[in-house]
Amino acid sequence: MNENLEKFGRLLVEWVRDSAIHDCDCALDRRTETRKSARWARLIGESSAEDAIREIIPDCVDTVIGAFLRAVDQGMIKISFAGEDREIEEIQEDDLGTLVGWYGGDDGWAARFSSQRFYNYLADMKADEFIARLLSRLEQDEDDGK
Image (tube, rainbow, N blue to C red; front, side, top):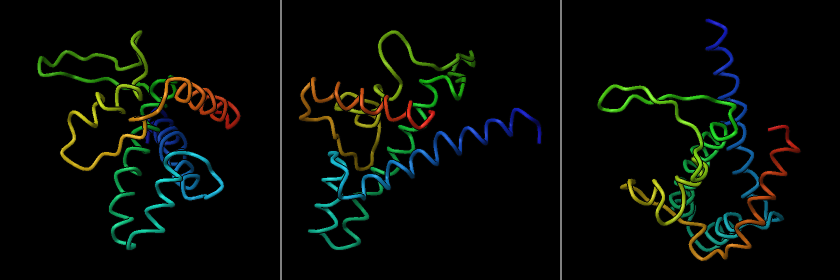
């Protein structure tokens, strides 16, 4: 296997897979005070196992996608996309915001393009709460070396 493919695999596992598992583990920890952890605790406490899992599955998928987009935003993973015109464009965060920001929320890619379940954790979040959580996440990533 070539060196670049090995590096990509390592970054993918560390920045996407491991990060998403860590985030989901934190959401299961009842000591974690996030919207996701509160929702998961409610689902697990009030629903059958099958119903809770059915609701949590899209969150786990979105967590993986979010981890991937965060890795791209932070320049750890570089990706390119070829549109219908076959012109290749490097995908990276732009001046309008981060890729992970384009993904979530009422106007995000998941809400607009997905035909499957989607839970918008940002729906009723006030701007100051969102900024505080974002800064906390950035500090956590910095502390984790990511």
